[in-house]
Each structure stands twice: as C-alpha cells, then as structure tokens.
Length: 217
Image 1: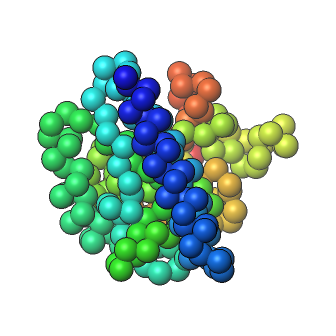
Image 2: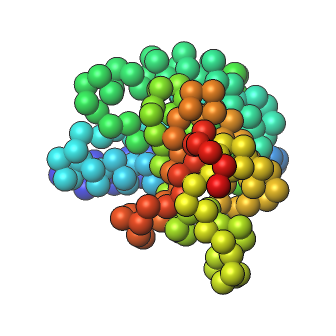
C-alpha cells in the first residue's frame, strides 16, 4: 500500500515532465531549469517515503513554493525576506506539528512562479537559506569528501584538510572555485552566526569541517 502511493506520485511527476517536452518544441535556459528540477523533486519524494517507512513523520516539499529568487536563470540569487514570508506559511506549521519537511534543494521560483536553479552546488545554498529563515543554530552540508580541503583530495594527496574555517575563509575558498562549497552559501549564515558543518555522507561519524565566526586557524 505504501509503495503504491509512492509509485503514483512518481508517475505523476514523470507524466508532467513528459507532457512538458511534448508541449514545448523549443528549448531555452528557462526550460532547462524547469526540467533539471525534477531530479530533486523525485529524490525528495523517495526520501520522505523512506522516512515514513521507518515511522518518521515526513513530507516532501517543493522548494518553488518556499524559496524565492531573482530571474538569473541557471545561477539565481535568493531573495531572503520574501523567502522568509513563504517559509513562515509553509514550513513553520509542519515543524510545529513535528513533521519533517524534506525540501528540494538546488532550485527556487521567481516572483512570477517560474522554476529557476541556483547554480552548481545550489543545494548548499538552499540549505543555508532555509537555516537563515528558520533561525537554525546549525546546518550540515553532506558531501562525498571528509570536509573542506585546500585542493581536491581525490586528485591531490597533499591537499590540506581544514578542521575549522571562519565564514570569511570559507567564502574566499568558494569564490576562488572550491567545488565543495557554493559561492553564495556562506552569505545567509553570517549575519545570524549559524554554524555550518561540511561532512562526509559515507563517514557520518567523522567530525568534518566546522565553519563559524571563530578564530582563524
């Protein structure tokens, strides 16, 4: 019964995507952003279903109903104050009922409702934006590496691991092209001094990198 409900939701999502391709003969950046967003939609449905299967009350939430961004397609910037208003309406009631919202990352919606993506690594940006508007104390960014390094640890064995970084150091690394961090992801957490941890999905017990206002290393 549980899997049948999930199948129905997934079929509906694939159906929407298929119809979109049939109806739209041209293909622009706007179309690209819309279509790419379906990966997150599908995964959020799967994750929320997996949580419910182990008796965790969870609900998949489409970020286009929560996060508002400008109209720079494929590399949008989030509008925090407008997002805060939408989050108060859609996420706060769930949290007050002890329901875990599984929010899609990587994309948002423009003021006029068009789906728009936040650039490479945009799910980090989604996470720190939500941390800001929900007044979180900490946000964890899950990666395939142990944390933040001076270089790509998969290619450079001499890359230095940073157990701690200040916000400014992390922002500087991101702006210089460090792939583990989205260049905008630090901005939403600085004003509220929200701690960011970068951890390895496959080694959850490893401490990872802590990014905060602390003393520079």
